[in-house]
View (cartoon, rainbow, N blue to C red):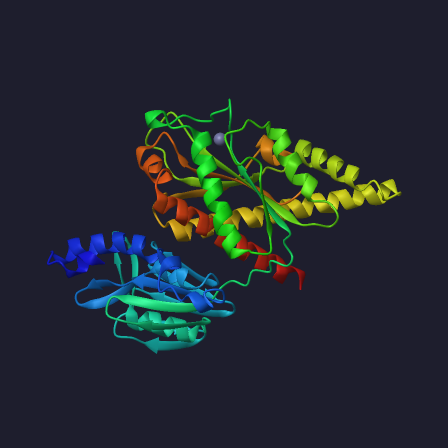
Length: 386
Ligand SMILES: [Zn+2]
């Protein structure tokens, strides 16, 4: 944003302001702080890009205006689709009109396509928000789109605890990065940052850590500790924090994992669940219940992984690039009797990632992103139960 004041050739300016814009945008959480109503409202700022003295918003940023707003663009067909709930807009960037529901509407300019992505004109963005009835209030100023929306309602009364697991520890240093960085130290720092953020965002939820210092804990013990809190109808989630490493120094990015459901894993978990149902005298009911519970834990783990992934992707916005939500057979997840995920926060073998992983700025963004993801996960659970 600072750069927009400099006199640089338009195209160049356009490119950097776009890149910077991205970084600036999802400083979102910290923007326009309004302490009093921070709980209910979320204020976001999206940087507009200037092309030929007109303001544009990137499609990537439009998606972030509201989590329910779906936007896609098919480069081959040069056509895009925007949805909010049941309302749909279709558009083409080479035509000065678009279709909203079944009506055709005229515009001066729909948008532009550049190397860096798809950009929609300010005029079109206003129409989109109105036509799709996206539940946000917004205003434009010269360089920004300012959005206020309701925070995803965290149904924290349903969640009793969050178990934070800092990967490795003690004699197990985990992966090694450049400059003798230890994975176990980074995961611990991130775990503490996450704890602080969750404490602020979910004051009624109990927070536990498998370790709060440099201590060795066996993998099975980690899920076991969390499972012990999961009794008497209490509901918790398990979040394990790790850093990745690989032979290629070029590989970078973060991933979120949930347990791959193979016959072995299902059987183990069903057996453990059955053990927990000792009070139920019918073995048939025990078996059935454990199967149902197993399937539900699996579904919820997947949703949790997805939401945490997009929470992080939104908040980190390029600091460390999003790779994928994946299934894997991690031992630490295998024994979990609650929704459980493992976050590979970035690659210690990549210099860019490593620099981020060690920065205060990243730590904060990571914690906010994960917390936001958990919030959306909880509201999705609440919706599913209605
Ligand atoms: Zn690890």
